[in-house]
Length: 117
Image (cartoon, rainbow, N blue to C red; front, side, top):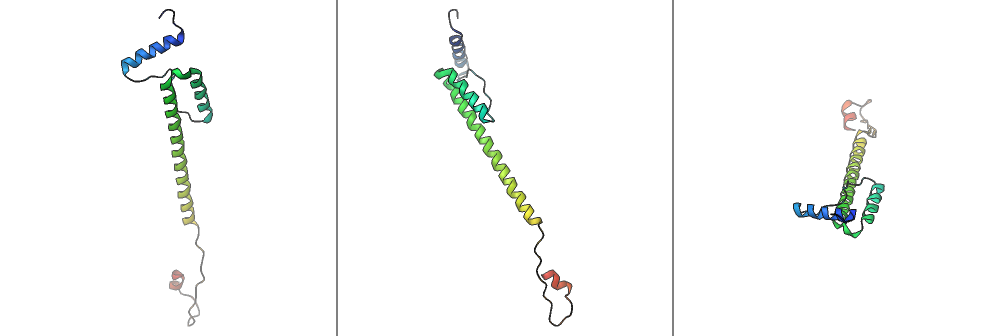
């Protein structure tokens, strides 16, 4: 490896590892971005690497898509919970009372008429 630049040495090491494992490897370890700032930082890192690291670019796009999927799932869960809580709140609200009709033959309303109303 004498006479190689650090980038060439790293690329050769990666090629050797890829030959051993049979999988494409990335120069950088990546985490799923949780915020737009993290995505921007990872894109900047990709642009600094250039076109030589195609597996890293594919990995970054998979991570970004995974982050979007996680965010969409959390949003859908929150919306479902809000809908359920609103339905529960509506059930717990007191019902509007209706006027109990009295029989013309009686002076007072009986319990059965109140329950029916």
